Amino acid sequence: MEKWIESLFICTGITLLSYIVGVRVFQKFSKPWLNPLYTVTVFIISVLSLLHMNMKIYTSGTGIFSLLLGTATVSLAVPLYKQILLIKKYLPVILSAVFPGTVLGVASIVLLTKALHLNQKIMVSLLPKSVTAPIALSISNSLGGIPSLTVLFVFTSAIFSLIIGPLLLKHVRIKSGVAKGLALGTSAQAIGANRAFEWGEFEGAMGSIAMIIAGVVMSLLTPLLIMLYL
Image (cartoon, rainbow, N blue to C red; front, side, top):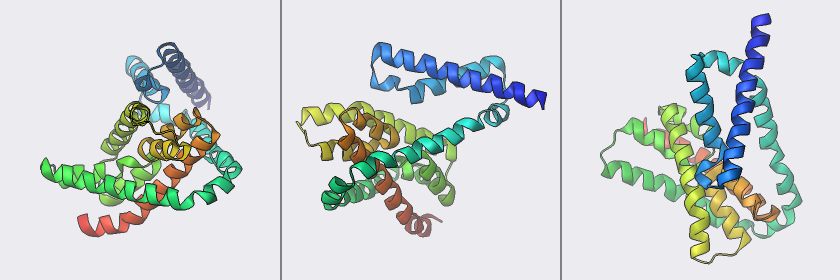
């Protein structure tokens, strides 16, 4: 019991310290690619490597953060509820943007992997890259993909969209809150929705609903993908 408590304090301390460092770095340099989601991960891996700590021990000592993650995810429903009337108003626009965007994302992966002659295991690991990580992992496992590759592709896709997305929207002079929120929510999942909140609560709500719908669409496509690749 004492060892478990000690492990809990050590693992929690490593996580909190890494988060503080990651946030400070992001605030100092204000670069999208220094998003704490990624820098904190690098810091944690570095510390665990230096301490030669087993990943299972670290995971068992940070269960509280998994609980808080679920709470944080549910909290995204608050701005959705507050913006429910506008969401209803723009629902046809939302569906007509997110649904084909998600489908085209899957089609582009199939075409790209075929063109590069990548094997099927890598292809199915790549397919759910445009949805939030928990859903992507579930789909990847269902298709027989490689979970670690799926997480890598999801995070890489998200950070690329987070860097390029706002610049592209600004370059083509898109000012619509609906378009901006949907674009980041569909392409960069949770961190895209979080970035959209910086533009306003309405844009953030659009990003959140885009992330949700993209996950639903991808889940509905999974049976078809299973028939094609299994």
